[in-house]
Image (cartoon, rainbow, N blue to C red):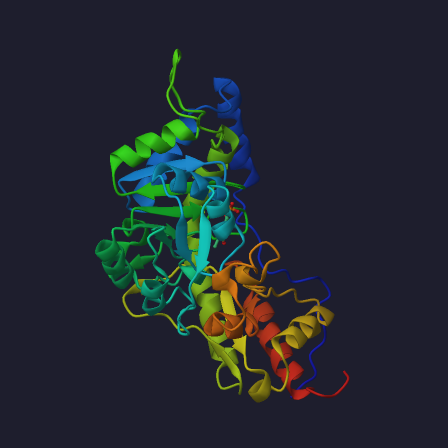
Amino acid sequence: MQHVEPFSQPVYITQPLLPDIDKVMEKIGQIWKSKHLTNNGMMVCRLEKELGEYLKVKYLSLFSNGTMALQLACRILKLSGEVITTPFTFAATPHALVWNNIKPVFCDVENETLNIDPQGIERLITPKTTAILPVHVYGNPCAVEQIQQIADRYGLKVIYDAAHAFGVEVDGKPIGAFGDISMFSFHATKVYHTVEGGGLAFCSPILKEKADLLRNFGIKSEDSIVESGTNAKLNELQAAMGLLVLELVDEEIRNRKKVANQYRDALKDIPGLTFFKDISGVRHNYSYFVIRIDRKQFGRSRDEVCEELKRYNVFSRKYFYPLCSQFECYRDLPSAAEGSLPVAEKAAGEVLALPMHGRMSTDTVDRICRIIRQIQLTAGKKI
Ligand SMILES: *Cc1c(COP(=O)(O)O)cnc(C)c1O
């Protein structure tokens, strides 16, 4: 095999989807003319409607970011005590609970999807449990039916962290239709973005009404403030960006699918290297391309591969590592005890997200894959 040279320019984990700058300027011109920069302007109202249609959810509200949206979701549902969640997620998931004075209770994950394992939920339920907060990790849907059954049996609420799951559908059902509330993140690193931003999809109009109050200080009308709300509004500039990115997102997802399939084709049959396959009946969004590296079979650990890739100017990410249960602020929780989350612990040591976005060239993907093969071949040798 031919020796592969490092990239001359860094290849980053992702690149934000950027609309044509002239179109951005045109939208900004409209905002300037309106002199309405925030507080439910025309852009936010339009985006809320268009995104609701795209995500096929009846009740959607937009927020300054996904984390604030998740914090407010807990507040709207009046959650307290303990909430069962997954350690295999981004810091924002358990943090949103703690900001509501709720104790996160970590449940182990399923090996196939790395989503919360419904089999583990029931034995973590106590009289203090008020909800389940699962995450659709990498956009792969959770075991939504089983989770709902457990929630119904114990009278618990369900909030989905759907930050990765923009546009995902399960057997024709939109991902935002499950649970009481689903949170979407529109951060610049996600498939769809508004620079920073977030959304909540609700199962009832009453919840949306409450969220809309809480994101704007609880102001009901000029003379009446009815809730101790906060400031979590999306502004007009963000919404303008969101309207333009929405025009591009279907093509972006189609292109990402091609990139994912090229990765899968080029990385198949490498001993000790596995990846996620598409699930039948699921519309995927190809948010991430994540490989798992079994150190024994591959010959090198995930950490070594990550470091080696940097020498080739390729920047991958250990996503998710460390587990939330290993954070200084959470490791003393009883559910975080070492050894109690074996599937998540193993996965956190093996996963590596490779560069992914819809505008990657086939040459770039091909070269990254050849570099990975080369890293394996040179295992144990200095290159
Ligand atoms: C990105 C992300 C969030 C937080 O979203 P922000 O919009 O960045 O606040 C929460 N959970 C998960 C799983 C995420 O990936």
